[in-house]
Length: 172
Image 1 (cartoon, helix red, strand yellow):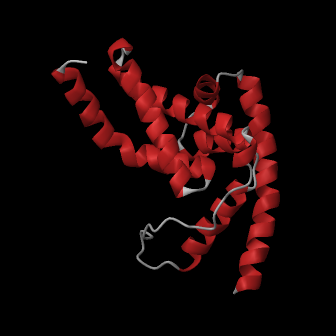
Image 2 (tube, one colour):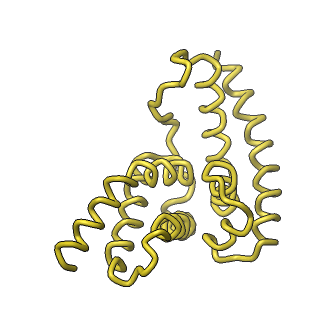
């Protein structure tokens, strides 16, 4: 890569690294793994930087690479069910943690219990704001698969949230 291309990549990386890291955390539930997965996505982008014609599609490329890395990693036997109970240290908009922290903690705990592909669909659809077609493109599947995985994922999340909320209530 020439100097100009390296500079373009560096600017993109600085602008998007935290958003990619947060998305990775939502997909895997562990900050250390999120760092590794974000790095994997950026390394893949760096390798292909010269070949990317549409610089407006960089976010989509990184998102797709990240989701595929999470799903591929979840298939490795040594990666199954190694989540932490860590909650990100982000302040609430109101300045008072209270119920919002408990809700976020319950949501993250619930997401950890949803199977990886369904979790990816839920994160893409509801946290990243993609529509069915966009999620299907990122995941490399049909829109029908996205719809069915969304329905199954929401059911699994509802079940998990019931358990997570019960756990939070008993801990208080």
